[in-house]
Length: 327
Image (cartoon, rainbow, N blue to C red; front, side, top):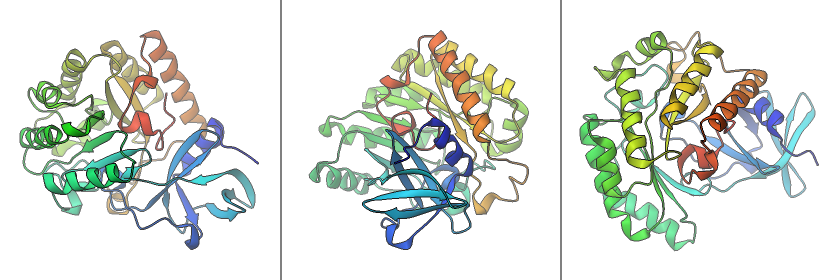
């Protein structure tokens, strides 16, 4: 049996998609958050590692049944054997819920602004969490959200939902766009960990792909992250850096170190190119396996240098690990 190691996982992440036998497909489940919104996906587990792949009939990767397991094949060669993981909500092991499936901003890498999805009510979210609790599958809760009307209103909406989840007594992580005093509001509501995503540490790329953020600059997000560390503590604040938008490795290195000095853990996320954003992302390139491995090694060294550890993370991306090579 060939088990997935980091080199194999990097190769799978570099592709990001898989063609899968219809009999293996889990119940229809599409992402309702971020760049991959609207795309069906599957979580593959092998060798103690996990990878999330979008289902695509044109993928060079193929997943087939083999005895009581599944195997991923490329060019008639078996790459790894493992299992398809059950997903409670959005990802394995977490009740991960998107609150607002719409956004007033128009970041060029993200499908949410084009979807005009629904805004879940507090009652709908409580029903999802309660169902997981009744099934014995509630370990942690994670909430993410677009921006339905304004960042301030969204923070208030999420904080209100978090307060209603207090009786479940599990860690709660929140990934949202920051607003003034958002960290204090979320902490007081009962949030354990927070993520404010910078998306890129290249100012020119940020201005180009996030130009719809209406005054919420890269500098504002960085300052919000700094404040968040003061509220939540080191190892409790993270941010996504998208890899494949044209940034240099040196830019990534400097960005990861700048964030680590603040006590923020950077998650390096390979670009996911939605069909709805192909034109806007015409020059985006999903990173090679070699680049992913090199950047991950670099990130780990920087985190060790500043005394940070992803192992303390309980929620969201750092706990899931499916979409990236977690440092």
